[in-house]
Length: 131
Image (tube, rainbow, N blue to C red):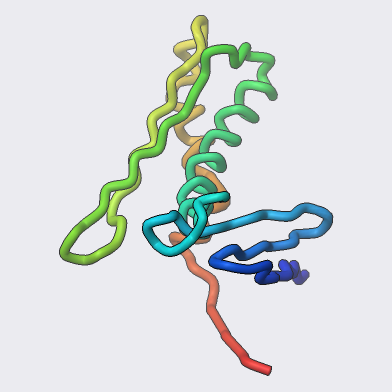
């Protein structure tokens, strides 16, 4: 199975991805020459890790009819100045009031099965061609 995302360049530092019927706009921060009108591609990448883990927590609760009001998720990315890259990700889930204690370990396992994370742990091969 193949999935394609088409990318266009509407001007400035903006880049637009079209995934099916949905458009995903990106821009660079003002300090990097962009207009700051949208997240940068790398910020979307980081957000995809946080939202994927959050989605798995949400789905865990929904499948068990557990109330999600007050539930939130925060991802903290630790940057190594010498390596010039992020080397650690910490994801903290704030459970909703009344969350059953018996599910605490299970919801962590559910979040740990995030598809984005799995792709980082076993990355795809990259091939770039120019026409």
